Image 1 (cartoon, rainbow, N blue to C red):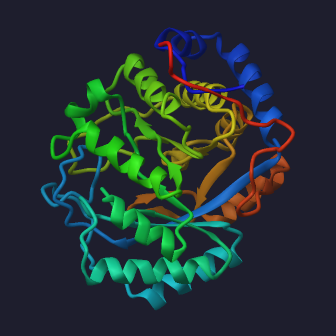
Image 2: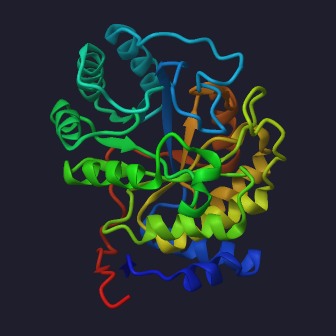
Length: 333
């Protein structure tokens, strides 16, 4: 049964399960709702880089930090479509476009993004955007253009959020997710670990996601990639066991979601990534860069797929129909 009435105590108990038992339980749930050999390959392109007015402590694109990121204006539609074609030919089935904006503004740049969405959609790929905060009207325009999914990460728990970002609040994040859901766009929302948060914050973020009226269809789990010049440049590397606990817990409490092994893969061995797939991850981002941070290359990933006998997941594929959704509400909590 798909539940949206999880309690913090229940998620804490799952998260703290002995690691091998946790992996086994998550792998069992994974196989009930997904083909365990399938992993979706996604590509993420920065269509507008740097110069962001926000102060996200992890982000090298914030204008106030002195990093090596070079600012560039919004790409032209034709260039983006060309990149999407290259990604499709290399095996990606989802193409995500990211712009370093605080929020979408109703101007020529947004019109250009709508053209990008239409173009990528025409290729038969799942087209996703991450553009910052949205109004209900902007979400409707993106839907009309053919947007399949919208990414807007919670990043961390509500309690720890102010330690990482002060230029917007947690409610802003949740409001955008609501606008996306109301426009009938697939929701992609997860977070980052390794920013100095505690286990309670990780559990709190998962609790927020798992108790939304509907679970996100996609939950990215990112390990911080520290970037020189940002406030978090000296953070220690997250261990694979921390990633496994996050992925496995997300898989158990949000069984039908795509759990995406996202940023941080470049610092993981093949064996560590295999543990994450065993724990329920079934999506990766391909290509040598995730917006502005390094990522394993296509050749490296193809070799990994061959060693682990994994298959690329097709676009627009739903969780297994043999396990229908029965939603439990929050009523009574």
